[in-house]
Amino acid sequence: ISGVFNFRGLNVATSQGADLTLNIDVTIAYDQSSIDFPLKMHIRKCQKGEIFISASRRCLPCGSVSIDVDDDSKLYSLDAEDAECKVCPKHARCWGGANIGPAPGYWRTNRDSDEFHQCTIKEACLGATSLENKDEHGECDSAAGY
Image (cartoon, rainbow, N blue to C red):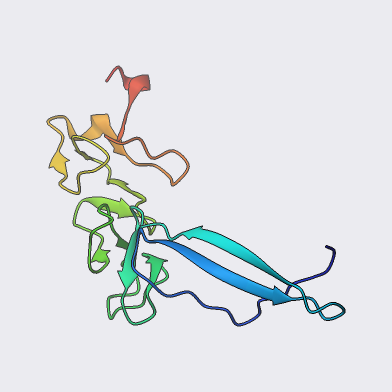
């Protein structure tokens, strides 16, 4: 069988992590025969850096969600189960989604933590210097021997 099937405007709204089967029944015009097409789908769960918007039943990345915060604030989420995005914590640098790291002079224990600790030797901790180079703990000033 050759042909084109166009499903414009088809929206599937269900729970996160659901497995669905959409049964499509097609009747062939010239001989009135029919063909069934089971279309199996898996709806993924929200991932780290996203929140579930129940009204639209979609996962949206933090940073694309609008809340009333200062212009300089960035939103983030480190837990896929978060109900809302969080405002970037003090002593952190945030780039939206799950992209968060320590500010200069601070470190954290691992990439899933949003608790930041002051370095004993503040100038040794460069922090997360950019989105592309965001070490989970924060960068150390190795040139100065740290």
